[in-house]
Length: 248
Image (tube, rainbow, N blue to C red; front, top):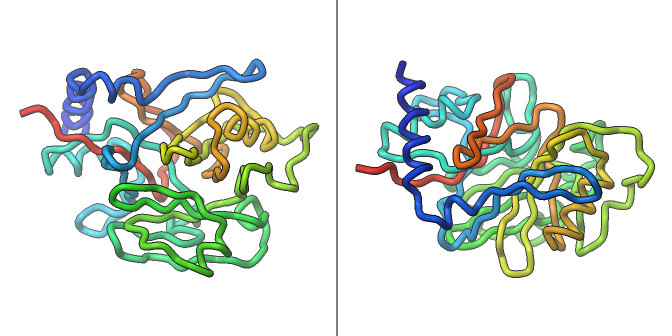
């Protein structure tokens, strides 16, 4: 009942939020493929990372996160899975939440998508956001309030990741994040299975993000109440969300 009540509060909040909040998420077609994109100005949006509840237990789902926020008079206007994690849902690479580092950065090559260098880091600050290649981050770490590492990078300095193949047969539902030249943060999830090359071109050519980071595939999920969307699935590790006050 508590979770259902929290979801109801969030949906009501979404209906009452200002027009700019409604416009944050929209559907875009590119080369015959559909994507859902949620965009935010980090200077005016409350973007945060989440993994544990106040008792130190793993949240794991949008509904549990909403229930925790409801106790604080707040709700999600958007959320998405935010980086790869181990079977116990601990982060694979760097993870910082509210200024507290929970896992260190991993700069070495390795198996799987995470180890397909270069990988990168989403860094959230109080009024700005950046997507940074991991070794560049380690060379000059910015003051990230929240940060999550994932991989591979989709776009690096305006160029696609060098290992992406235009004719790749590997296709999955994928989600990622990029920051454009104006500082706007764009989160995107494909509506159908896409290749890395197709997904990266969407960030570079449509969202115009000179740097973009792959967050995950297969388990990719989106919470966007303004679109009537609350994806279900297996428990998650890190999540990223935009937080708003609930109506009083």
